[in-house]
Length: 121
Image (cartoon, rainbow, N blue to C red):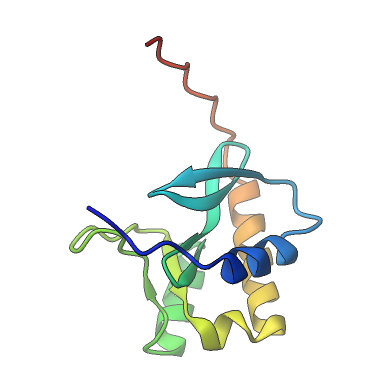
């Protein structure tokens, strides 16, 4: 399965917004994603940014606008706790920063995951 590569501008935008957050950058689906205490919290996928939110926040966001949808990197396989924000919501800085912070706080409150041991090749 191949996906469109995210733009450097979108990644730069997210990285700028993440200044001051204690998170680790990794790759998933060939795209940059960010983790807090071993738990994925947000990332760039194709031309969108996704964030991880609580059930009540997810319900609120999904009702807010039809363009906010659950993250579904593979058709038919929605990632339950993640939603996609499109351009109009990403570039509304107060809105985006509010929800990026809510996502961060939600993931920060989760138990830390221990790193998986690296496989020997």
